[in-house]
Image 1 (tube, rainbow, N blue to C red):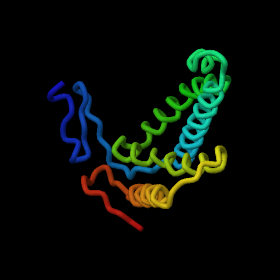
Image 2 (cartoon, one colour):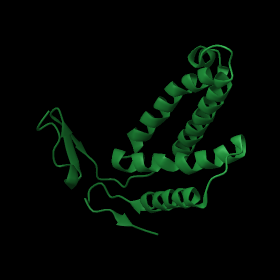
Image 3 (cartoon, rainbow, N blue to C red):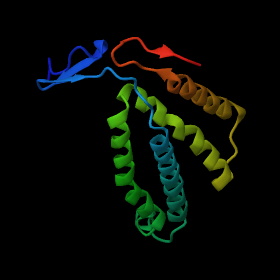
Image 4 (cartoon, helix red, strand yellow):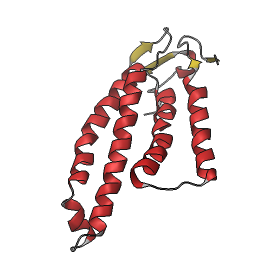
Length: 154
């Protein structure tokens, strides 16, 4: 493995002898990130719903879980999540895409309040706000792939 990757900091990378030159500005696929965040939230809400229904089942938890359509919905959405995520990675560097994918954290907090009536402490809301502010900072950077140092425009 050693020696497969090189020159990443200078805007060039090679993998298995192929050189990849990136000199254009990176654009963030906002629509794909929105779809990914929506799927993430739906999957988490479906899994929570399935778990709640299975907990009240007359059989064991896991047998009850297997009979929950919410579980099957979350499993069916898995390949779609993967497809959207890999499409995002064709347009965005992993070092930028992964932090931006955490937009689902604050959205899931909101969904938990709306769908399940969960009450979150002010400290949890502050954490969600910090995540959101971090997303704004990371998402506002413009990366020139030919220049190793990103410039941040607020």
